[in-house]
Amino acid sequence: MTIEDLVGERLMIGLPGPTVRDEDVRLFRDTRAGGLILYRRNFESPPQLVTLLTTLETRLGRRLLVATDH
Image (cartoon, rainbow, N blue to C red; front, side, top):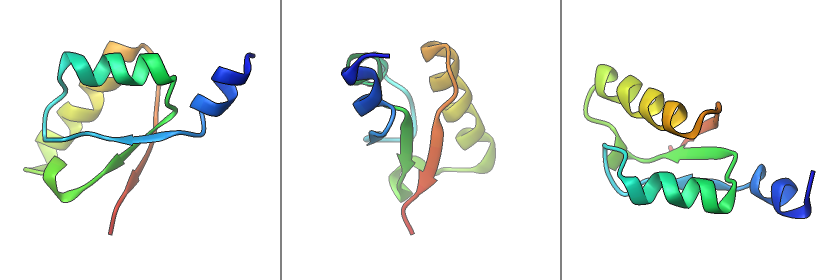
């Protein structure tokens, strides 16, 4: 595992909205971020949130640590 991998897996990134954009996927790949932090702007409904998480993890090909801002 490289130093970039080690740093990346400790990094949490927030998305700007309730959907996953191509640039969001690129950011997660480029930084090797291991986590997603969710803010109010990311929530519309429970099914939408499931879709957001499923879409991002599917496009990345890996699971993420998910946290919420309270």
